[in-house]
Length: 313
Ligand SMILES: [Zn+2]
Image (tube, rainbow, N blue to C red; front, side, top):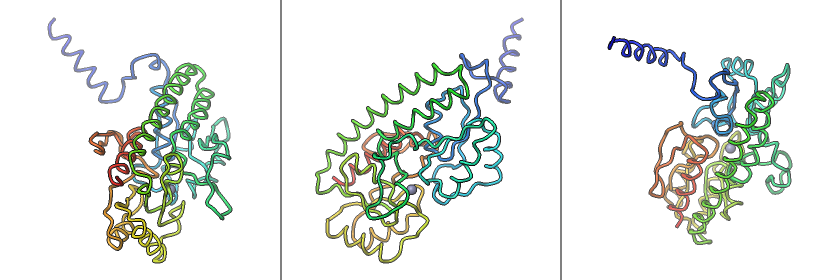
């Protein structure tokens, strides 16, 4: 008789390994809702709001540049079988946006999460016509506005989950609010004249507006146009003029131009910031004496804030 529990245990482990076991809790009765997200940032947002009722596939992995990304054949089949497709919008996914918007048919929802942000809160490059800056997650108060369309479209696809999605959305809104307060107090420790953030591409304008940092980038808001010698000289001169102590590389952009400016202007590389992609879930980075899971939005923003605050003070 004593052998029976062991056998049952072994069977359970085997079933778990083969993926037969459903997660425990209320969601176990229904198969998870299959959704696809474009970037790691959007995927994280959908995972937080969806919890275990939702199975999220991210098309782009950590360190992938969304401006240049093209859909693969595998992506097309994932998109074709998704109940809901989430992307950023505002032309962040430059080469994919028209394709994605066309896929909203036959009961499939296609949701651009940044469409929920009122246009008077969006930044436009001075003197330039065209698209607003898509890097809205730089300000947690704006990213918080993207929670609502995620909650609403998950609820439309899975009405039984309404209460769960509403509760998770409300809790996350509170977390982002707390994160913003913390970030503001942390950046406030940098003396105002030293608040100059130099990066490779112009992904930190919302971050700079939220926390009163002057943001200077070598490339524009997209990485499609490469930096030229004139851009490198312009930024290197500014680094020298303002006595900027540190410049930053980005996880989704090759580091060459920033390393060149660092060398030419005598400012050190203050670390790697996450601009358009998160790290791998569970990937821990240390900054400001703490360790963060940079595979989540919360951990990524804390890492960026601490890196900037430590390097510029
Ligand atoms: Zn970008």
